[in-house]
Image (cartoon, rainbow, N blue to C red; front, top):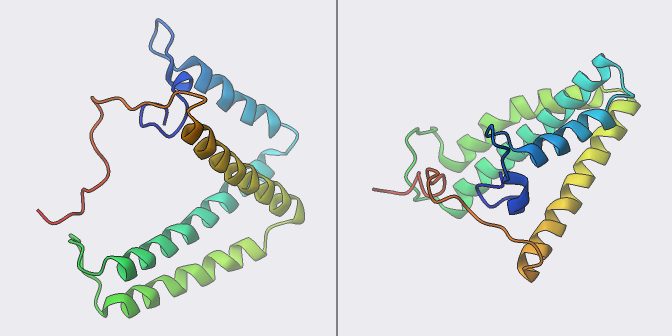
Length: 151
């Protein structure tokens, strides 16, 4: 993520063996913070966050259909935007059911994780805007944006 400019540059610094050491240490600290949970609770939190992410993907999918209806897409969904919305309803109902069946502890840990992520994202955008920390991108990486544009 640091090489793509989504995190400060220092997260991408590598050891002589090619390991992004600071990134690995931050990842390990996240694992350490979850160590007070049981394995089943950690899996449940991960699934809760994954389900939350899927709902965000569905929202982005429909939003893109509404905002850019003429954008090239390699796959067609019958019914246009209405068809896209109808396609997202059954899995969203299933996901909401899974989320509703989670324990209070899993729900609270997951919501705290989401809130920390949102606050960190806002802080990183602010820090990047003020240029307090260097963000850069590796020019050798393949470009991920614009791949769906008409050719």
